[in-house]
Image (tube, rainbow, N blue to C red):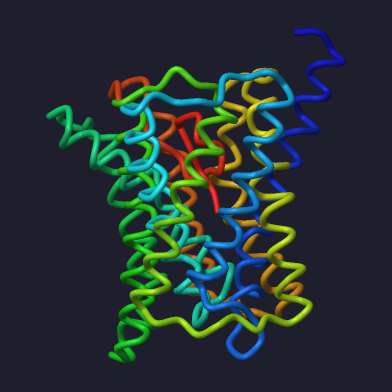
Length: 315
């Protein structure tokens, strides 16, 4: 790898850091009560626009964009788990929860991925991996305790959604990894978005969401999510993977939650308490430790990202 390429890779990784950290902030603005979209309606219009852009770009670049029937089924299942489940639940939760808190909860995805894969492949975790998982659970428990102690049905539902969200993303990632398709990552992402559009539409209708009347700021948040998060950061992530060592690229998994927490405090005046900092530290430490022990345990955790090249992560 020459120096020029390395610098471009590092710049792309910085784009991933910034954009995926601010994605949760944009979602919070996009679904702000009385000011934004209903959550699944926002997901629906985001999926439609992002799918069109990604597939149009792929067509211009001469990529194969027509999947077989079996490939389309695989993409539809994975896309709805990743986006309608993984992202839709975050959109719903962010009507009530702070963006930094949501990002911290969702950043636990590698913890859930490791557990699912240990069960799936019937692996016995090492002592180091077990300790890493316990640290992560302690962090999630500390973050969740104030909401659960209120015993409000809404607070409990928010915590449930923010735990189920990364689990859906993990299951979608593992499903796609076990059902590979002969398409580029960009085309796969386009179809994940396209098929998730129908999932968001069905969820919006089932929940009886009202007709959207978003403010200018909500529309700006939608545009940011489409152009920068779904398209720009995806492209940057793929380029970074091709230009930099994998372990360096994966640093986004424990840098993004910290940056998102800081940006939520700085730009939205979201509270940051000592409990939040302790919980965040434990979750980030757990994710770092899981990555460190990955080779020893032969477990490859999937990560929360918009690049559905598996591992995948977003927001």
